[in-house]
Each structure stands twice: as C-alpha cells, then as structure tokens.
Image (cartoon, rainbow, N blue to C red):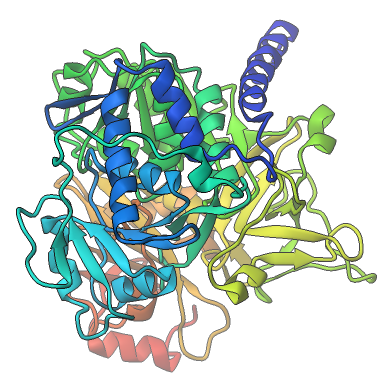
Length: 599
C-alpha cells in the first residue's frame, strides 16, 4: 500500500471512529437518561417524519410514540411496578419497538423472546425471564399452547390483535381504544432508575444448548443504538431495510438505532425472503441494509434478479460476512460500501471495520492499542483453556497467531459487563489473572487473529475448532474453502469422534444445488486443504438448520456423527485406499469404528 493509500485509509478509519465515539460520549452508568429518553428525543425532533414502514402501513414518529404510551398505560392498568419484567413474544411487526419503549417509560423491563421457539426451549426462556405477563399476538399464541403443562408459573398472555378475551389467561390487549392515545408518562415515573439498570433481556441463540438471557441495561442499549447512529452516518433521508428479527440485538437495536435516532425510516419486513429482497429494496428506495452474513450468502446464491442493481443501497452493515461472499456481494449487486463489525449481545468487545478491508471484522491500529482494551490470548484447543505462563498469567498471542479475544471489564460504558440473568453463567464468561494478578476480562469464546496492520480476522468459535492428527482445524476456514466449490450453496463443518482414535475427524454437511458433483469434490479439497483439514465425511442435505438469527446449529449434527442409522440423507466417507468418497453403509461404519482403516 503506497503512502497516499495509507493516508486515505487512516482518514476513513479515524472519521468512522470519531463519529462513533462522539455519539456514545455521554453514556454513563450513573446517568438518569434512559433508552426511552433517547426514543422520546427522536420523536420530539422528527415528530411527523415517517419512522416505520411495515406491510404497506406507514407510521410517523409521533404515531410510534402514541403506541408506546398505550403500552405504558396497559402496564399501569395491570399494576406493574418499576423493576418488573414483561415477556414480548412477537414476530417482526409495527408494535414491537413501541412495546418495549413504552414499558421502559414506566420502568418495566422487557424480555425479548424468540418467536420461533416452542416446547421446552420456550418454557425455559419464559421461566428465567421472571415475567408474569406475555405480550403476544394470535400467530404466536399457538406456541404458548405447547407449554401449558410445563408453564413455569401462572402467566397471562395478552394478544395485541385478538378481538376479545379468549380465556382468563388469554386476554386481548386493545391498542385502538380510546381513540386518542394517552399522554406520555411523566419522567417522574422512572425517577431513581439509572442507565446501569436493566431495560431488556436478549437471549443467546442457543446453538449449543438452552438460550441464556443477557441483561441489557439502558446503557448497553444506548451503546448499540447510538454507536450505529454514528458509525453508519445515516440521516433523516435514509431508509434502512431490516429483515432481521427484532428480538436480537443486530436488528432490534443496531438497525433500529441507525434508523430512528437520526430521523430515518425503518423499512421492516416480517421475515427475510431472498426472492423478494431486491423488489422490496427497490420499491421502498432503501439506502441502507442491516445484515447477518448468511443473508448475503443466500442472496449471491440466488439466480440473477432484474432489480438486483436497480436500487440505491449505499451501505450494508452487519456481522458475519465471510470473505468468499463479500467480494461477490459488492461486485454483483453494486453495493457501494460495507461496514462489518464484531460484537456480542452480552459482551464488551466491539470492533468495527471502517475502511473496507475484505474479510476483516475490525481494526485496532498500534497507535490506539492502549485505548482499546481487547487482547488475544493463546488458547489450547485440546484443553479448551487459555495458555498460562509460569506466573499463572495468560500468554498473549503473537501477530497472525489465533487466540481467544478477551475484553477488560471495568465499571464504565465501554468496558462494562452485565452478564446474564443466571449468575453462574455470567461468571463462566469471566477470565481472571490475564495481564496482571486479579484483573478480570470478558471471554468472547471466539478465536481471532490480528495482522501487522491491526486488522482482526475471525478464525473460529471455541468448541468448533477441533484437533486432528496433532493439528488444530478451523471449521470456519475449511467451510470457506468448501463453499467455493461449484454447486455448494451452504456448508457446515464440524468434528466427529471415531472410536479408538484421538481427536475428532472432519465432517461437512453440504446443501448442494443441481450443479454439484461429488466426484470432483475430493480432488478439489486435496488441492486446497492440507490432509489433516480435509473432511473425512460428507453429509448431503436439502437444508442446513439455523437459529432464528441465521447461525448454524451444530449440536444435532455432532450428535449424529457419521452413523448411517441416524442419518437419512446421503453420507460419504473418504476411503483411504480407493481415494474417493464412498457411501457409508452400516457395515462400513462398523469397519471404521473397529479400526480397520489407517486414518
């Protein structure tokens, strides 16, 4: 990179960083300015501007505030007190943001429940929320019927679109009467509450077990919303297209903040549709799109669409955009800019890639290292623990060496860690004695590497990286290689246990299209991957299971292993003497497990 290019990069980086830090500068854990105050400030400033478009209906900022005030009045009518919690079980719809904003106005926290859950997982999430009331709709009532027997406590479900009460525990919440919305609750109703108090509970995706409820304080919600209002550089002229679930932080806080805190318009869709995406973006003249990386992969896997370049998208922002998708996404669709970021709902490690380095999740240049307390510590994959020196302190990873990302915990806005509703789960995410004796750092659970220019790159999720033939195998890096093979739409890579052998052998679940040819896959992988990283088993399936936030679920795949009695789909083994993938039969499975092959 020549001198001019370096200067241009630093200007872009520092501009993005300055805009972000400027918007969050006043956030303080002891402030009495809450997230509902931010919402009301935006309403007062942009009152009659369109705030939300949903399924053909337009809502001004004033109308959203009216809905929020109705939810606050409902909370008063139920006798809810400051510090209580209400569960919100809804799909994306116009009432979602006003519901939690209105409850916050009277000091009530909201547990944002994944509306895709049923049965035990739903019962678990409602149980740990501590809520006695559920705001829902008729579409979601069926899910509640699956837990009637296992309900954690007597709970009343309030449907916002039911015409009348169904039963004593299935009530109608009327948002239309009286015709005039109630006035805003006085700020005295939340007197004494501070920014460090809980505003929301947002649940982890549950990719490896039951979801955990992350405590989102007003301060943390403000960080998400204000930071993206600054980093995206949105204005009142922008229209932000959101298909992500509002029960999760990327869509529900980052996307909403980028839109509503700057007077923009949130164009909200109930669910993501790859086939309708470009029609929607074009029809509503959207300028910004908030993504999860897999949505971008779905779009590039679609056949050409007549509107895929007939749009005015200037920016896509989000996380999880893999390098092999990134370049095709911006080239094919003509999206001018991408802002990739890294963060977790509950964590204190945030990274931004302000200067478009493809594949990077963020950057901390050397001259700012002391200002950003994120470090990479060496990690022992087999022991599943950080490496420590003779003094019991963690060993920092070298440049370009994978290590677990950790963030220093302090009682301020940028370094605060509020944890989960479960105290034991919160403690497990804290790593102590890292740099100095007695210090405490948040464990992201993610392996990353940092290059000489300060860019961070995601390597793998701890627990996904496995060891085979004495080498660490990154499932993410192997998946990137496989995804470039013709005919592969999606791929999920993981390790499986073989009897009598140490470590775990690689396995890939692949969703192919009509052009996929298994015969050429092995030769391709021999060229592209070292022997220890090549998947020994291939599983072909019509779709890969994801969470509601489009994260791949591996727990069921790992449990199935390569046992043909548990797998209905096509299953193949890289035969060590035939040098091709062969079908795994029950007989072959028994041979592999008995040690008949030198693997």
